Image (cartoon, rainbow, N blue to C red; front, top):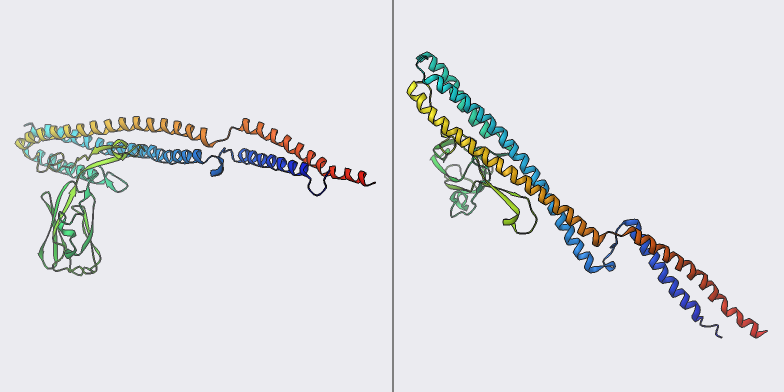
Length: 369
């Protein structure tokens, strides 16, 4: 028998320490609800679970994208419905004007309303927006080509460091200097001149009628700078409704809808009901414009249906990815409770055995009596 080294006590301490570790681990899992609370619990599983969690967050955002995109299209549809109603009224007026039971004075009064309706179509098309982006003027999804070889107005020598657009579709905006104090922007037959008298370099030059804003540098010279072209590319909007990592597979695209009265839209500029001949021509133009609006409804409705299916698919993926992560990361509470009970019994037994082992060396005293 030995008293300097109590091997039985050391063995009991080791077993008790292991039982304590197991109890603490089970308590940690039960209190957090996670099977993996640190990398040491399951390094490989943690890596897989983290990847699933990242995918889940992206999928949830994709689901929100689909919902918001659908809301955007509903706003566009609402504006298009109003334009459709205006066109129906315009066709009614044209049918009235083309008939000889209306005299010249009557046609003039009809023309007054007709002209106002044309203005209202453009107002609706320009003001139907979602987060500042016009939806019905053909510019939705358009971007500025920042390559100075194409957008020459952004070249360093012109002292224009950026350009923003609102309501401009694909095409080229040309900037010229008619005089030392003016600058003119031209786009699709529309021109706007801004007087630079008193302009402070470093400020913004706004062409509201066209929808372009040029941001100048502090070195901008009002007499010479700001000449060149600004290229606007594309009018295709992209809605990201997936999270596979392959953008081409994750997005739904939609061409911009142009319901303005311009030639690129409803093509009603210059139409008139002032005479029966003009009214007859306008009838054909209005019918063609109604077809354009019907095509817009077709595109909007088709994209809405597709977004609904995409949203349903993403929500199913969210459910399945959540289940997959749960299998790896979450604790099985029933199994953990059973293990905790087992380890607590081992812990209590270890304490009891350790007490007995610590008393064993006292038997040596009997040999010394």
